[in-house]
Length: 486
Ligand code: ADP
Image (cartoon, rainbow, N blue to C red):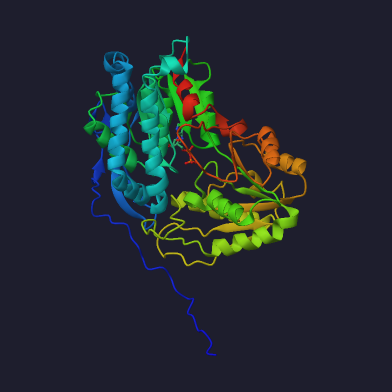
């Protein structure tokens, strides 16, 4: 019998997403009052937005000063008084439907720009970010003329002008989470994307202009922390909706104390993902991989703390490592890529620093052996075993592809361990037993708990945290209340 000599040392052929249809301007202005306007002042300031996969500049972005924020808020107030608060709710709904449909039509373009500017794998921007963003507009469009049914006999009213500040991990999706419910409830908006990922928000501004939304109903301004702070501190803003770090959330909370501004904060997380011995192990491993390595771990609800029941620990870790070895890190625009580029040099430094801390703390470090591109910001999927509750890598949010593993014996033990964190945004549980799922969901202090799945989002389902993960809910019926008074 001849021996079979297979060559297993092969790579997938490159499968780059087409970029020919993408049109980016060299310079982007501020979207205020339905127009693109230069920042005020004699010397307007612009900053670069960079492709984190090769560190090349994509475009110049305008930086909004306090005067520009003031202009945007005035424009939102004017639009609220003149058009939006007077418009019949069903017509408001039509505008939101229009945005949803246009977004769907241009999904491919938005997905490519999201991956270019933010570094996320095109597979994800195409199948998660953009369709979900459109789904949020569709969902909230439906609520616009049904608020009296959502809140019978309570006569809900809009708040006025909403100031919204969003992060860089799901740029367009976060914009949709904020804009869609605010519009459906009759508010007008000043929104600021994160400074490293402004492009899809600015593309959305172009789309909103094409959708012929009354001028000033949505104002999209760009800039960094100072611009965000100017929105928070503006006296004529009625509501602040923020998604970002816990540290900035605390600054915002202090800034609005003693004012009439309504606030919702969606902050950091350090989610527990728990595998019991009776779980379907292969399915659970796939869920753990998705929970932490999805979007480079740039997910506030990432399942970054894995708890495995002792009897299956060895098996789970072996399977995890095998699966990690198959993940492809590289060009975000390649359809084979699982893990794209880390969003910025600063974030890569933060992740690398935590990896150093973990090693120093005495945990055992493992990373996959996949090759990395030469230019750009990259991090392989990594794993720390032999960790303990007191380790900083177990306690602090890393926001990167870094998983810590601990074992447990009993249900009560894992509840204690999982709740031993400042955060409380999300958690996951993998088991064959419904009774364990119900016991855990009632005892875990987390806003969202997934059972036998992870990182599943839907516009109908509310999302938000406990403790230092913030307060208020976005999505679903709950997401409407955040923009209404009664
Ligand atoms: P991350 O650490 O994930 O970058 P940040 O909380 O720093 O998160 O940023 C989230 C958003 O908050 C970004 O749009 C950023 O520009 C904005 N931001 C940063 N500092 C402030 C601040 N002091 N006030 C308001 N917004 C801010």
